[in-house]
Image (cartoon, rainbow, N blue to C red; front, side, top):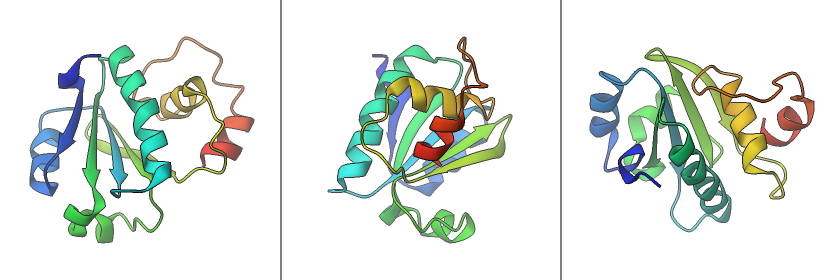
Length: 131
């Protein structure tokens, strides 16, 4: 895995610095000790190694008070998808811990943040499980 494509951000300032010069970003808002966040982080690390066209990062929600309020983040984990420096979509929580990395990849690709060679029309199960 390319470590530089999967970065743990210290705070919101670091996020805004990244966003100012990176057009496509996948941001995991997480909380320490949350099992769902650990599962989502594992999947995103796999995708970060595969999708160098986007920057993958994570930010502890406890260090992101402004973004939490501004983006109305109420459920953790939550993923922010940024396409061409604009908020493209959110993935809020997830319903099933048995989703595949490919399902998450498909869901992120629907926002245009990453490229995907599979069939995006098969997204009904993805939408049900991954918001």
